[in-house]
Length: 399
Image (cartoon, rainbow, N blue to C red; front, side, top):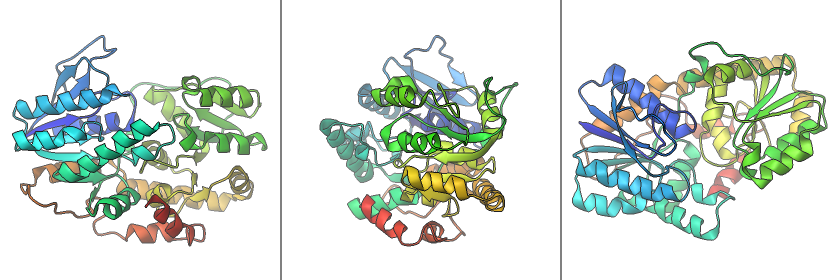
């Protein structure tokens, strides 16, 4: 078996959920699958060093960017090189290159396994042309991949309703966040305990809701993000940067520092409302702190309805003011139990490589890969007073 992993900046991963996924698939391959050859395609942009190997994986480089509009060409060229060099299993992370899949299927017998990521074309940041291309790419990925992976039940529901096709549900691991090399200290000047949020500073991550809620409370907040990368972020930084309880930090990539920040957090605020299962959420769940998350279907599935949910700044402020110690401990314990059961890289790696090892190339034969022998995710999402009623409306909204 000759496996190619495409669609990421490369390994070792520094930033991004797909890069972390690719790196941990390499780790799993090195431990468990010595008989299979693995190659990861990487972007050569801004890389001073270009090693030929990472652990058990061969690395190949393209002088193209893996992000932005150039990502389409990057993925298409990677796909072509992979199949022309004899790879019989291709893991495509994202749908940027999916419009080339009909041609790839025509000239190659390689088995294509595509992780379609979130419902990317629904993100507010894209213009009409980009949304059209992304939606067409999503269709091509579902139509022409041999196997389709969704990282969240709500994504699978969308695919089933829109295209009449089923998906394998394989999320992300988060246990790597508990392990790091070397020492790391949280930035100076932070309080000993605080609410924590980490994300790209984008409207669909509802950063404005979190900042507005916390600006009216005494609760200290540490918020890590790329504030200077957009007008939205710069405006929020200018508006809220002067509040004494709000600590707005620039992006942090060093695992030791991230670990120190997370370890001191007393609560985690998660504003993502698009994109499926979010890596930063499942990473934080391993730390066993209570999670207050945006009430979209993605987050309810990820947390099995056991977190607390908000949709407005008023609701978030009310949750923070009324969350008692006993309830906080219970929610934190629930988050850790879910993470240890569903979001470990051994579990995720096994699911991917079992899927790749299958020989059937015809019609898709799909089972819920990561949730076998467990309760239905619909039951997860509607458990508790907060999830009842609203879940059906949110899932319907995705359709």
